Length: 392
Image 1: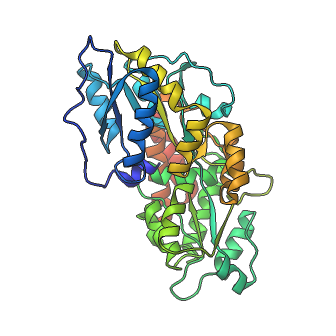
Image 2: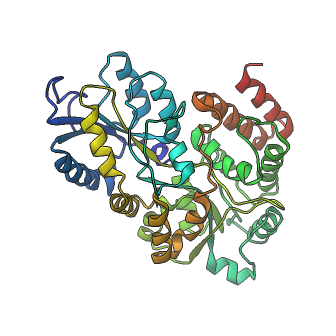
C-alpha cells in the first residue's frame, strides 16, 4: 500500500526505458520497482547489487511509480523486465498474462498466507521479502489525561473516540479515499468482523460500515476521512488533531521525524467474538518469463532469504515474511508486536477473488464513500457494491 502514497510523487526514471540487457546477454538483468523515496531509493540498489553479485549478474534498476500500468503496457510489447517488485494484489493480474516465470523456490519458514499471496492458479510467481498490516495507533498522553484505556472492541472504540473528541481534536481518523487505499483501510474492520471479500453485502460487512458511518456521523471522526490518505493521517496524528489513527508500520519513521513519541500501537478493535485482522499488504518479487528467468529466480531467492528479509523489513518498517525473523523483530522492537501478531491472520486480497479483486475493491471503496457521505445506508451501499462487483 505504500505505493499509493508514492504515486503522487514525481516520476523518476533512473534508466531510459526498460532495456539494458540484450536477449542473448545473461550477465545483465533489468529490474523495475516503485520505490522513489528514501531510504529505499538508495538502499534497494545495494540489496540488488549484493544479490546480483551472488548470481553473477549486474542489475539495472528502473523506478516507475505507476508500476502496474507500466508492466501491463510492457506485456503487450513482450518487454517485461527480468525482475519486478509488484504490489501483492497486482501479481495475479500480471501472472495471468503469461509474462511471469514460475518460481521454483522453497518457501519453508514463510507465513503460509504470505506464500499464498504469491501464487496464481496454485503456482508460485512471487515471493514477498516483507509484508504489512494495519493496527491502531493511539496517543498515550491524551489517553492518560482522559483516563481512557486502549480500545479492544468496537464498543470500546466508539466510547473512546467520543470521549477524546473535543474542540479541533477528533477521537479517531482512518483513510477511506476513492482508491484501493480506501478499500485497504476498510478491509481491516470488515475482515476483523469475519467478513469475506467475495460477499461484500454480508452482515459482517454491513456492521463494519455501520461502525465507520457512526464514527463520522457522531463527529468522532472527521468527514475529511473521505479524501485523506494514510500519509495525511500520520500528519494529523503527529500534530495532535487525532487521538487515534488506523495505519501501518511504515509510518514509524515519519512519526519519529515529526518528533511524535507519546504513542503506542494496539491491534485493530473487533466486534464481540472477532479476531484482529487486516488485508495483507506489501510487495512480491517476481521474475519475467524471458531468457534470463533462471538468473532472475536466483536473485529473487537471495532477496527473500531470511537475513535479507529482515534487512528489507528494517529498511521499509515492514514485518519480515519469514515467521521466525518476524518474531525476532517483535522481540527487539515492541512497536511491531501488534503488526506481527496480525500477520498470520491477515488476508491476501486475491486469495479468494484472484484476478477479479480490482473490480470488487472498486465496488467496495465506492460503497464506503456513498455511506460515509450520507448518500445511502451501509446496507444499501454494500448491496449495490455486490451487484456492481458481480455484474448483476
